[in-house]
Image (cartoon, rainbow, N blue to C red; front, top):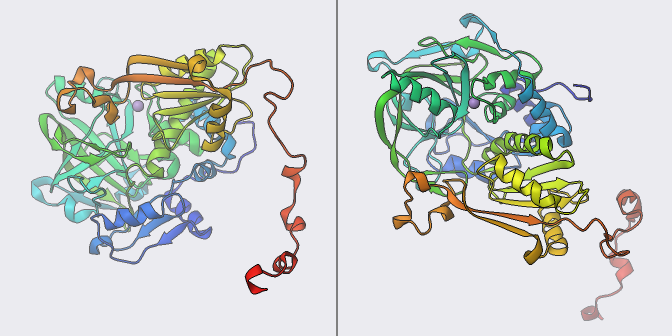
Length: 485
Ligand code: MN
């Protein structure tokens, strides 16, 4: 990289110490309940402080949550200014760095080993797994990096999937139709299990890398290495061939079972609604390994840590996709109100009239989750919802600047796509069927003097408030209150 940046944070514990040193890590009183209470406290601190829970539900293993709950913190973990966050992630995704395999003796994650053969261990006793939302079926692992190998090529994939505790050695999992799904389909077609590992408690950049929108047969652990600026140390699992981050806190080793489906859900998901209980894939646990004093990471669903983990890699991908066709696209943002998936704001240095509509069509093609695109000019801060709304209020006319595309493919988790289907249950081929909306909120390239001149006060940015505000109290200058006269 040619730009100036500080060293990236490559370890979870180093990052947590860094947060603690700057009053961004709250130590919670010991013994809060794993059911709802832990998630409630973490949610109240969301975006302000990470939360460390000692002895949750009396369990000896502490739980951590919310250590990536601000965009600025993630930039800080990368060691780059916030304005360079997307470019930096994109550069890493385009130039992955191969991992470095270490011996088990040099892998903290294998310091302690629990083998599950013959009912020798129980996941429910080993790990403090919280129950998050009101109608969740029960305890869920929400921050597990699921790592598997392509049965044909051996190249790994990393994804975060929600994982339900089914029993002492059994987990339920939601697998959306992406890379892990393709690997498992290939194994299942041969009537074989797919070896998997679930890494819990990894550094912020490895967690972020797992969410890259990368091609199949791109091992996201290599993107983590590129973000770290050094190869990620990995170790081979004890019961299978999967390589896992050697510095992780905890790893669950297991197998996705062929031709086995069991009920999973309901579970409160990122759009802040539940997904239904359905027959889904099952993992049999073979071993759990962990550090001597591990920390269990949980992500509170739909809160900032969850939303940002999805948003930043998507934004980086959408920006790259748009800039291939429109080099004058300067930035993109998936808004928090749009659940960091559905509503995209695009900043454009417009050079020709009509360009904004081409750009919105490009954005809809970039990811099927994108449901609404607002295109604004370069002077609009796309991270400020008030600025974006101001642009719509003053530069947009619905009869001229609105684009609606009916009957397109969108997110199946958007509940408004179920309206009109019997029992709000679209059959699989109709799931996510919905409309796209684009708003061109750019001003015309040419206009009469001052029609589109933005009001500014000269010198406003340069005011030094410490100098400008008098040290004496203001009350004396205001005079006596009327009622006291
Ligand atoms: Mn992948």
